[in-house]
Length: 288
Image (cartoon, rainbow, N blue to C red; front, top):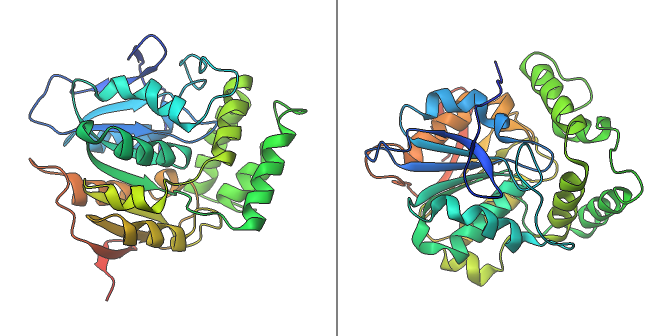
């Protein structure tokens, strides 16, 4: 599996990113949003496949990659969403978000309904329990005194204690991105992520566009239970669980993630999702 540096262009005065097939109006527009500490290159192992079906925009979140910092001393989730929203102003899109990007995708589906034609919520959080909330708040507070933390504890949560094969390759790339992250951009985003949650249940109920909620069976933080709970609330949605996957499944289980996106959003009309739960192994299998 290979990850490459994607060629960037300016998407707005604050946002940089990678674009492909932007003038091919036959293809549905898909916007890819990474998580805290990552950058648009996080998606580079998927874009070669997805570009055959979609018009792709892979965004550097504010304060990440080549994007500018949020213009606020105390940013919140809406600030991130509003900076990214111009990317879909003239071309509505399917929003694919991972981790913090998943929270942004949900916020966009609630607040920019006309511009969002579908959402894929990958490793999204929903109502963290008290223990998980306390742990992530502690990590966010530690960034005030240690702005460039040792990435090892984070990588261990994402990949386990002794990753091998593709997992080890993915871990090496994530380590480099974390070490090279913009210090303030990383800290701002982590504090926002720690303080944020999925939209209130009444807003999840209001989401009309096709939605897929996907996570890994071995994901300890964005758990299968969280994805199932959100899927039960969103009206036109499905839940997908990738067997054996953890937090960085878009990297370690790229084929399964691509298969999911193509299954639910591919073709001439994006978003032909059937409600229910699918469990993925080496191929799509409907869960009885």
